[in-house]
Image (cartoon, helix red, strand yellow):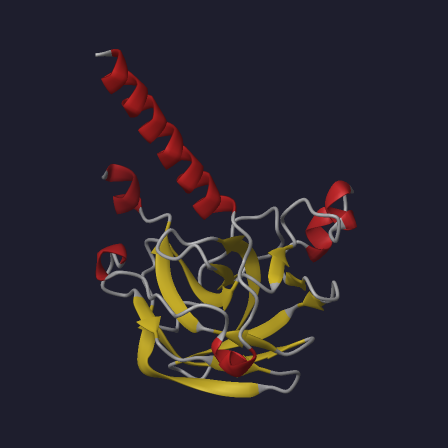
Length: 214
């Protein structure tokens, strides 16, 4: 019996060690041949994570530059006005840190002015801020300015980070809804302070009443 207990304890310790190594291991070096495809294979959100019919994954890699470019959607982004909708820019997280995180490269996160630069990426290689500027084009031709409102680390892929584009007055206010005359968005116009790669786009519904009743 003592022998069985000992082997069980050793097995548990081994599993814990493997788990820690998997969760905290160093990010592998980038493959020079991978180019703009990123460091890791793309893992799209599973179908089970799309909880509303308006949600969709746009499987299109985008090379964002300092010049405006228009990305048309094959299927318009429909609006669910009962929830809070956002367009996630999914990036490979290996080259960046979130400016919402405490890090030596984020000195402003230790000051009251932290939120000034909170919602953008900071490139690890040189500390440069990667700040996108984006516009959603409505089906009635209206332009809606959207800004990155935060960073998420999706559960379906630990190697990516998303920047959620939404309308908002300021970082301390609840984001307003999209204009009433718009039922869907047909395109995204985007540029950034410095080039970066978006692996794909994810349009989702958040803070919907049904989510709190489940």
